[in-house]
Image 1 (cartoon, rainbow, N blue to C red):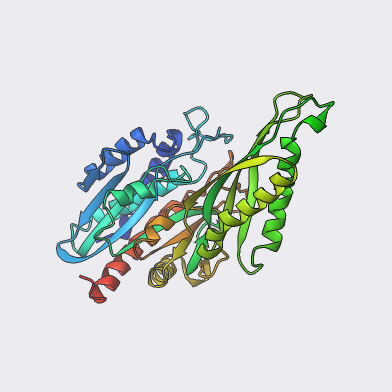
Image 2 (cartoon, one colour):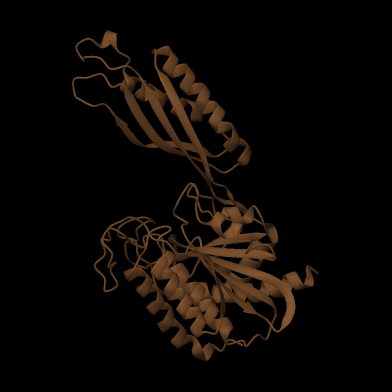
Length: 397
């Protein structure tokens, strides 16, 4: 069983792991060295590890002495194409790549949980699966689908995950039953006009003016054709068009994202966008092409697993630090793909540094209060213990 007298050594190891991953970030689908490091760490703990041929994901398996439920934990592994701006000893050593979304901490926490359970010598009923997932940042596809295709979830009763969260103080957690994070879809719109000399615009069809009307029209669509009680947003983040300052643009490319918290409104969006594009472009004599890519689904927390997280977190940080009905956000997480398949839940682990400026996820200045690492490992440890007992009592094995 876990002995609290080992806490100081665990903290040292958690920080060491996190800083090692932070110094050596790897982009989505490129996590080779990260995978080797995790494999080596798990094997040193004498934990069985499953590897795969098509990606760098891993699954550590801790088998109890007695039959029982299968509880899975998942962490992500990839970094972002961001140049780090922090002046710290563990600064990224890879140019233009940074762990700006906390995945370095997530992996450290998972290895910490592995270390805690490696000392149990199997004195529990059931099986623990530790899933290290690649390519979480590779929207709209993401790496969760790769893990699902491997069949890792087929015998799993429940799955849990967490995300370091700079909007919460270190020592606090946020969670809610139902939608916690949004579905994220990508839209690419090509506006097709006709080139002409800028001095004779009547001979052309101006792709840029059409694109401007499209952006305005999509805004009106969101304001007037979506139920105000639903949550949905559409943002165009990239515009490319034109070849020369005195030539009417014949083609403009708009690239953006649609975020929703309900599947019904999500499925309505392509048709509504298509209808708006048809009317706006036809009115000016142009044409369009729409590529609507459904990406990550809504992350919907299941009721019982959410309750288990709340109980485990209260055991570790106390009731006042557990926020069990937080507002959902329109950021996305491909953990939602697991929750479409099996019961589970996901929570936010506060990592804001007290008395300091804290930067949001994906910022070149993002950093964490490393005290959150031990808190996360302890919550996950308690959570697994509670889940093994809970799902065994439910008679699912």
